[in-house]
Length: 151
Image (cartoon, rainbow, N blue to C red; front, side, top):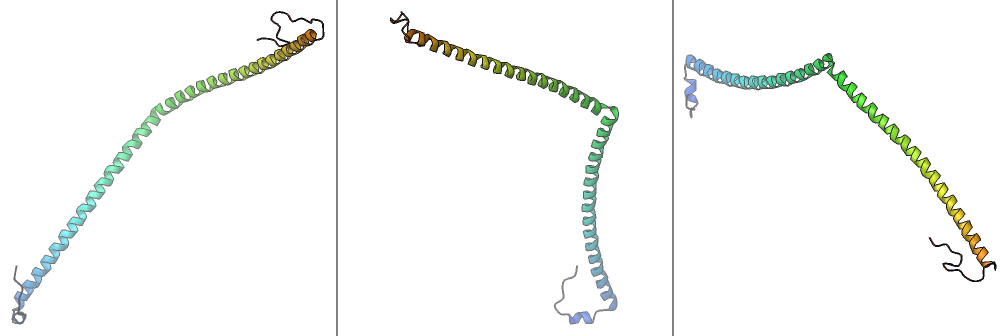
């Protein structure tokens, strides 16, 4: 490579062939630089396209496996198993709901019976208290709690 000239007047005396060679060298350098940049850009583009091809190939393989599962009936069998398990769980839930309803009814009946017995007990206790204090029995008997029942 040539050193830069300090005196440009020397160039005016330069032969046309030398000027042409200098221009051609300059054009060759610029062409090589453009070629290098183009090669770098093309390499980057190829790498990006190869990555995209790999991604699309993996996606295609996954879809092919899924299609194969559908074609073999595996998915339908799996769905049938899940449906059967859910139907069994639903039946168990319905049975449990029926039992809960029956237990709730039984609890209501038992509560009503308990209230009826409490009312009957209270009525008998009042009657006993009245009969003891109406003058029929003036002296307290052993264990008498003045009309109150001990539980």
